[in-house]
Amino acid sequence: MHRSELTIDLGALRRNARRLRDVLGETELWAVVKADGYGHGAVDVAGTVLAEGASALCVATMTEALELRREFPEPRIVVMGPTAAREVAQAREAGVELTVADGEVPDGPRVHLKLDTGMGRWGAASLSEVPANVVGLMTHLATADSDVEFARVQLERFEEATRPYSHLTRHAANSAAALRLPESRLDAVRCGIALYGLSPFGGDPAEDGLEPVLRWESHLAQVKRLAAGESTGYGRRYVAEQETWIGIVPIGYADGFRRDLTGTRIVVAGERRRVVGTISMDALAVELADRLPIGTPVTLIGDGVRAEHHAEVAGTINYELVCRIDSRPARARRSVLDA
Image (cartoon, rainbow, N blue to C red; front, side, top):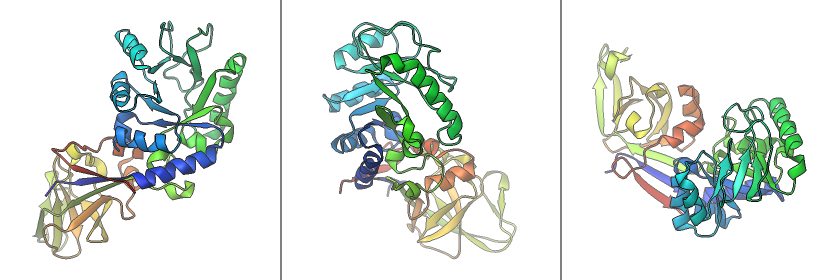
């Protein structure tokens, strides 16, 4: 029996892509598939969203771009992160588009110039010269999920700076802006988290017509009874106040179930149960209502338990949780539903 199993529902992914295309109208949908498709499998995700009308794939590194190019010879692939000088020739040969945030525009590859309009991260302060191989202009919105007014300020700065170059493809919107800020959609939007059926606002993705794509399951590997005063896990953070049954699940922070998820709820035998004690590298404990057999199914994400729930407990965002799930064969089995 595998430690855990990840199920990627490509049917849900298709429906999310269609939902976004309905929202966007004539604006192009560019799929962000960096970090192995936010932990969902970049190749599977890319093939599915391209079939649903996505017109470009966006990644963070040249390595990610080249891996996708081997599988997909034709579509646009845009590297959004910085690239080294030695990677320019690779981009030219593979037909990969680069992003330049500052400095000289390299000859050969198609290039997107990035402006910093308020993110305070990658990007130039202004546009000076736009060489012939520049095909796009972009910026990144810092607060589309939390402060729409500042996002509008950024958009105004971007549109003013790029107005003389409106013949180029202009793109600024992420998932949050694409869903809630129509004026941000411009020529193309770069959607990541929404494609995977995860809320860019930390709430219920169904509110925006989205379905979670990833399901994460495991099982009870041991069941034991704690007498009153007995504990489980490092540091004795959980001490039973009365006789209590607990289950040990062979998933821990090395698998991506963070150490600060103590107290979150997972589903055991169809019921939501509380994770207790300190989460170990390779195991966690869950409080049970009664004794259950070894092998009883456990759902970590799915069956109503959302990544957003876990993120709230951990004080983080759903993006981080799914990106950190370890899907290597040594840790998990990965299956794909293609319906």
